[in-house]
Amino acid sequence: MSGQVAIVTGGSQGIGLATVAAFAARGLQVAAVARDRGRLDEAIASIDADARGRVAGIAADVRSEAEVAAAVQEVAGRFGRIDVLVNSAGVSMSARRRLVDTAPEEWRRLIDTNLTGTYLMCRAVLPHLERAAAAWIFNVQSTGAWRSTPGASLYAASKFGVRALTEALIEEHRNSTIRVTSVSPGPVDTTIWSHKLEPPSEAERAAMLRPSDIAEIFLWLLDRPAHLHIPDITVTPWGGTPWGGGRR
Image 1 (spheres, rainbow, N blue to C red):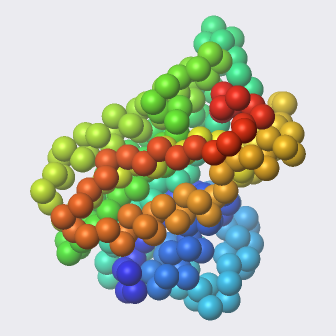
Image 2 (tube, rainbow, N blue to C red; image 1 turned 90 degrees about the vertical axis):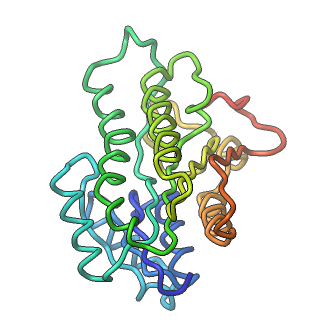
């Protein structure tokens, strides 16, 4: 992996930050993309010093076509190549609500970030990946991309959309040097839970997956031989789940 260049969105926290740190520790040059420059700088400063020098922070909003294009061009100009894209930027609903009780603004927030952001990043990065000897796109989905639950219609719609986009990309690039895989985690202990109107308990969060679990899956996939492709990896907490597996 040494010398490869990766772009990771949502790189200032959660799965994104864990992936940035894990990739840099394995020798990749990593561009961490996030909206908030201050938070991004703090996140990069928290990475182990030996790996930190391989990380570049780029402030950009994945919902903006212009900012996405500028960020990708900056990465290509700085490193001369792009080999891996991880679409990890995402938002969730603050609480479960029936569709009739949701606001159009909430719909746009989830669709624009989770789905449109993934589309814009893939569209901007693909021309660079097509020039790589071996490239990969990783899309962070959710178990909510495979089964919707009451009160999570907007979130599920955004993630079902990412699933459809991923499946289409797989078919478009089958037998090419670009592999596309989604990772669909169940609940992961990230700061996203702090924004819930009813945050989970300490016991619930302790039973969740860790962001590093997902980062390790990406590394494992990158180590697979070129003839092997895995369309999706669904990963959930094992053992007793205090929330019954239904939280989003």
